[in-house]
Length: 424
Image 1: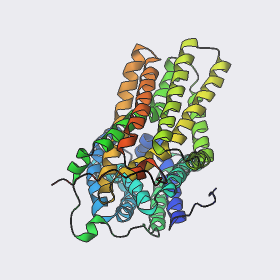
Image 2: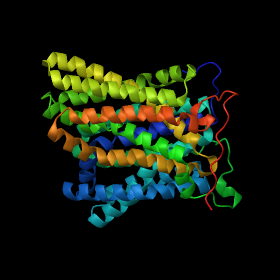
Image 3: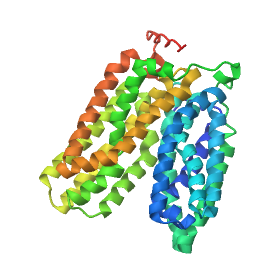
């Protein structure tokens, strides 16, 4: 619910509705990605997996170009292009029955998918500032979780009715979802329509980002936290089955609790944090500390190894604490990165920041599995250390970041940080 005194930004409802609809589309294929593409194209699981890996890596390499495009053309325009590419890609997947055709469609679609978060964060930065930005961040995350959950339920119903042939209909439904989302986002009006590119002069390049040490520190701190974000999907299922010897059904229960809390109380918790007047660095650090508490809980549980009932209760408490950390950290962390980026080069800054998530996601599987082979509690110990390190880093970076980044509503006494000189 919108708090008294909070003003909606222009086109907010269209933006949020578009995000929710596209999240439904994502939820219809992400949980079944390998199976989805196998049945849609008819190719083997091995080939599908290989293509997805190669195109995913290529998508990471494309992210800096997407950041440059945002700075030149504006986030709204690039956002619409990416929605169009995703809509076209999913419309073509059922016809990509050969390896070259599938690889071509998957490559173009992966480039759009990997860069989308950078562009969406930039768009939120264009349409909202201050406390409105934090509120929009929280609403976006809640809608994404709710939409993905709804998409997963929807595709389950489709498969129950039509069997694996329903994946083809799902691909076309995905295409429609992205097209409708793009139409809705086209109604959004950024606060500043004129971008750096409209002046005819190219903004400073990535050298400007690399010279901004506080922002690089913020990116490094986010990498440490991002490893924790990967824990629920990558480490948690392995830990349950190999160390706790718990039933695999608990993994599904944990995901359900996490998704339900994110969708149900995410906006409420973010609003409470925002209205408390807490500095974004403090609330992001608090989120990291809650992550650390959840990871310590896993170590204790893995040491005691109680009976099945006690394990179930303990895991429920741990997942709730973990999710609270996510809900506290995410809006503040996202607002920090957007608000700390100079407007003219926001796309490049956020492309650099988003790499911290991508690198953590890529590193997590090999890191967690290697640590698990030594001791089931070791990966949680490492994650505890990284979460605490992120919290300390955020607090130490506070005085080096711009006031508009640290405070949703900067106090009059907070002097802004001097601008970073542009690269020659």
